[in-house]
Image (cartoon, rainbow, N blue to C red; front, side, top):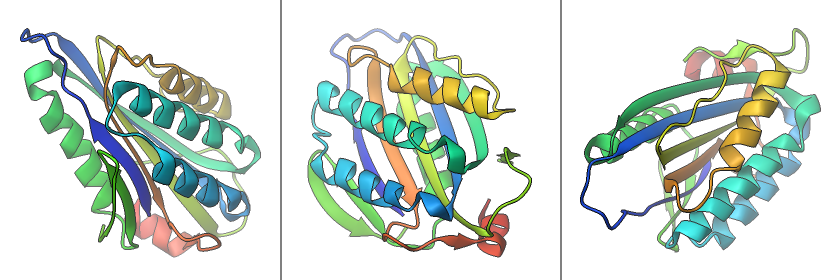
Length: 196
């Protein structure tokens, strides 16, 4: 599994509304180039600035949008909260995702690279090889972020487009997670069922 992550605090001391959202995509194993793309994006990301976080989110969303033929599963989950509680909700989403991973995690937090141990998905295809890659985007944004329920490939395309278009001045936090991390490795069907 890999990840690029960061959290930046706004300067005002108010407690405005914040949306914390998780978008998860399962892909067939033929999308192996995605692993290399996500590793490159995570290593090069400037997670110490809001502009860098926005670029990380945009590039990861685009990487996923490039592989629609391999989309197998999609799911979104959202929590509307307030700024003072947003980091707790963000951490809850990311920890819940990481707890399902058994592979090593590539992490980029505030430009510090490290290795660490690391809901029902809607099936978008009825047939295909029993090997998969799973990618997850977790974001916290000021205001609202209303992603569609994922019931089709069109819904997933819309959700990825929306999440990738969040501006740097709205963005509070981003984490991009994927498993397996190493190029060429995949999850078996049994692993997918057991972990997701």
